[in-house]
Image (cartoon, rainbow, N blue to C red):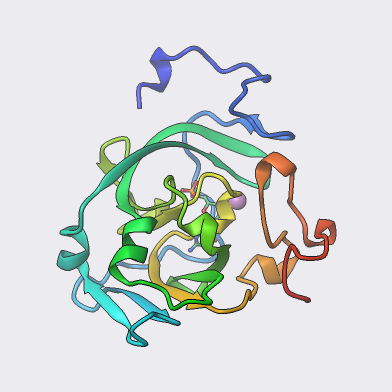
Length: 209
Ligand SMILES: Nc1nc2c(c(=O)[nH]1)N[C@H]1C(S)=C(S)[C@@H](COP(=O)(O)O)O[C@H]1N2
Ligand SMILES: [Mo]
């Protein structure tokens, strides 16, 4: 990404949400092991409250044939490091919503990854124009540790809301907590409002725990 050619961002970089610091390079951070990609059985599914009441799935070739978008976005980890200015390429989440329309009454999605990792997002956050099912960063395919073949990038939220190794999107008519949201992290996770922990939640921020 030509990091070395750039000015080092200052601590007051306007791209940094409160309480975050700039991280050079791109560390890999996740809970549990890196899954092995199995091309023959891999499928990305959309299920739950679809308008057709049917689930839809793409195999690896089918998913890779979908139209691509590119967004520039930062990654903010709740442990306070931010990796700035990545060029992410992938399938816009909004395109998926067009291809598999949710039923009326769908308010949230659960994004499911290998080994049962999950993250819940409000439908409007999932539908945001910079939310991507990313396959590439800075022109290169994701490495296994960064989520190959596909991860969610939702730059308006803390990065735990962006599962690596995504396998399914579940449309939901009510909110439900994902993996970290069940374990003390904030249901909404807006880094600009420093919504880090569930004890900060206000009424309406999430389902009861
Ligand atoms: N499947 C899965 N996705 C995950 C995680 C995880 O534990 N499992 N960790 C999240 C967290 S907390 C962060 S900060 C980012 C880190 O992404 P990176 O390893 O590419 O830097 O991945 C997110 N996606
Ligand atoms: Mo994180």
